[in-house]
Length: 262
Image (cartoon, rainbow, N blue to C red; front, side, top):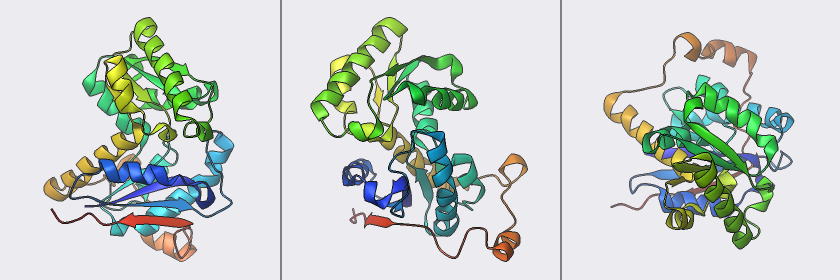
């Protein structure tokens, strides 16, 4: 199966370590490509105004690239552009980190907490979790006083703050599972699980595994994205006539490695 991971930042802000994490976690039959936006786009989307700058790019990439892929992943825990991209993905399911990790956490526990970098993020993430039906499962948000660009700078410091926040969520808030609330928090879940003794969901891996499952379900059972009601997409002839999504996908960089035959 072919999967596309859209990192919604400018190409000059891509962390190759995230692609390495995807390759390490993917299934043996999966091929995964990671793309980012052109240089000059925001280097993170902590702010809603930054989100607005990248949503159109996500939609255009999805429109042009979807026919070549079995599933698409939007790589931001805000699930930025998820609803919009799903309208134009054709037969390809589109998944995102918050939606995926919260669904998994709800299957592994009764209550979960989300560990986020800054208080700024909580409002949007809470809105999404309520939209996804997990409001009653949400034990708490815990903040660490770190921005998106900080998590991979000093791994020891990041791990220390994650463990402190996670322990407080378990002992004080009643969390039975933890979600790392930013895709830049990749690489820490395994050590945290060993230390804390509860499931710790890496959002990058969660979205990847959800994409693999949905791609397999589409191929085997014909479970495809709905195109009626709220899931209806724009008329193809109208899009073509008006040129809404341009002639090509606005991709600044592309990382790709084919899965080896098993």
